[in-house]
Length: 328
Image (cartoon, rainbow, N blue to C red; front, side, top):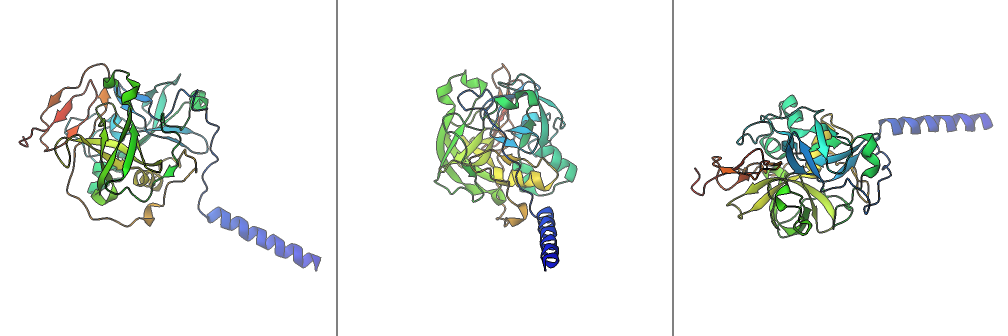
């Protein structure tokens, strides 16, 4: 009898082990982050990619690395009108990225534009709005990182439900063009709705996102992370409205296509959602141009970009392209 009990127990244990092995991968334990009050690296710090300045959005981590998020277009090298992530030129993965508050440069570990081009992505909405990159923080600086957003605190989770029109939103921008005035960094506003198969949120905030705010994170009324600043519209649907890429879709795409197995650092340690669990929404024909990074040390210039009602926010050594009101 004892021999039978031992054999049965061994069989059950083996089955349990197999079930764990083939089951859903569990998120890695969260690292020990620095206290928010003393951390020098956190959401909202500036990133510099070969002289072009952006604002970081959220902190992510996997079993071995801490990452800081920025927009994929922050490492773009193409012209002002090259806003399609499936064709626009970009610096390669591995490119050094200077991070405000870090003693050593980070490393571009993932870029959605690079990945989509490698895959030959054909989804027009993903090509236009999948705009996420992860910068791996050097191990020497990992202990200086906090996932807490200045003024707003730690994200409470990852929004996978979308944000309805009229709902409150918040963000934290850190463009050099604000001259270091911290009071202008926290931004409050409302959602104007979600479109383009769910890939894009249009938002209006006071103050609106400007060159250098590119890549900054957005949270909803519950404090959940939902987006990454990508575009600025001039005319429609509202002057100075911003386009914000859907973070849940961006993370799902990354994890489904060989990117880091990174999760959002938040109060729930929520993993990225399963990309196959989403139903496709009706495609939208509206395509605002890219909210470009701000460039270092020079004020942005404006020139015609040939698209109505949107601007591409470039860095200060790259121009901000603006469409004329007549669509020229």
